[in-house]
Length: 492
Image (cartoon, rainbow, N blue to C red; front, side, top):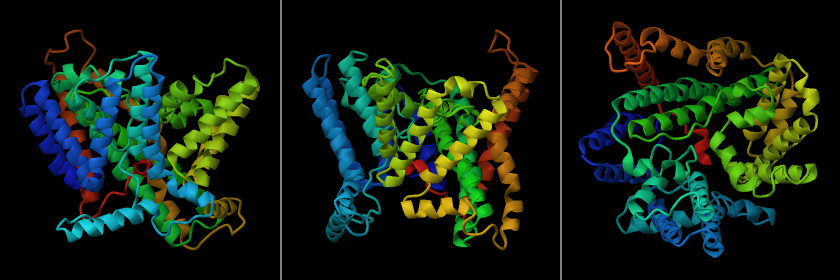
């Protein structure tokens, strides 16, 4: 189930918040959150719920046996979790390498379809799955890997209560698309957080902003892209670049919007989830871009792959080899396909060039570096957005003008989309944040007495609450009679 879903917004979420705040004690609150998290998962993929619980219990038991120096237990845990991920996400891709095709849907989808039909004959009413990948399995796996490696390094102690461990892994705000959290960073909050109404209000604000990013910007951009594809208006020079720019903004507002919603929900329930985006489209280099985009994924590969391999401590050749490993794994993490591997290789090449010619590139003007970074990232998203090499080749050919320059009706679509592109261009910068911070500072002030009631603070609360209500209303209007597009990163 998506956050940008009316059932979630007006039934599931209000019920979860109401029950959470009515129940006394952190233990009861955790139980309620766990029940709602498992229900959230079951509403999306009920067939996989037993797998989720059983795998989590196996990891819990292995965690109790994990300690610094116990390599065998850690190795077993890594094999178990990476093996489950590989079976669900990469089996069909690996089979295809050897010329083995599993038919429509793949091996596991066909097998699960058979199981579903058998269960339905027994009186159940399961829907036949369309994908073999359980919700959030890639994020789940990386959280478990970080848990075991941190235990092995002595950075945290094993969780002794299965309820808390299962809640850490399945907490519904971060379950399907992250951010990737580490147990050491959330362990204390599992037992000691308190109801904080100020934090709850800030969380509601952030959730509303994220919802607007997803519904009003990303989904709208996605509909224009689909319209261009259906009308074949993206098969020419202008249409192909127009579609690429739209996807450039769609994927940012889709994923960063989801992250804002996840972090906002975390605040509502007393958790502070790690930041995942820091205005990546304002970067002046590819290196800087990847420090600002999907930050928790980058930190995972840095701490658990790149540095253990030697990082940059063993010479340039070893550093480049380590980067190659990281970026091939990054590509594979995003999807089982040749285009994802090509996407990872593309950024590996760009980062290698930057490291090799860093001093020369640093002398270029900031506007030029920002423009080139934006262009290179956009081309990277073109690779990312295609699941087949043939489709990618067609798109790149169109962007080079090999299939014509223009299409009938394209001018109207361009003019109609200009307001969207303008809002996206501004929204991807620090301007909205500066406006929000400036308004808060002018009205609420920076006085030491935060509990004092002043006219300015009343104005701030009224205006900010009205803004929140308007965003929610606009999103609701957009969702009535329609459905929000599935989040792009929900497939990973």
